[in-house]
Length: 87
Image (cartoon, rainbow, N blue to C red; front, side, top):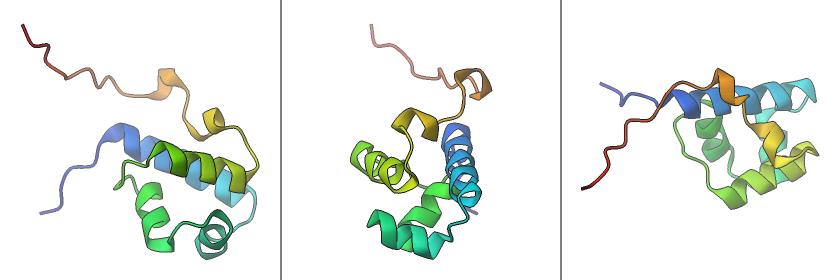
């Protein structure tokens, strides 16, 4: 049984796919342009990878947009405040 995907990663991946497709770029061409492996980038778009900050910068540069544009609006994100505070 596959691990449950984090809803925020799924939304970020969906946003990245929208931006890439809006520019008419295939995943393969995009991975070449961004310097990321296609399988790694595909995992990001599917919400299976928690992408690192430096890779977000690479993606934004390849899409010619601001890093903040890669994320959905905060109001669209699910409540993920499940972290317990230590006493």
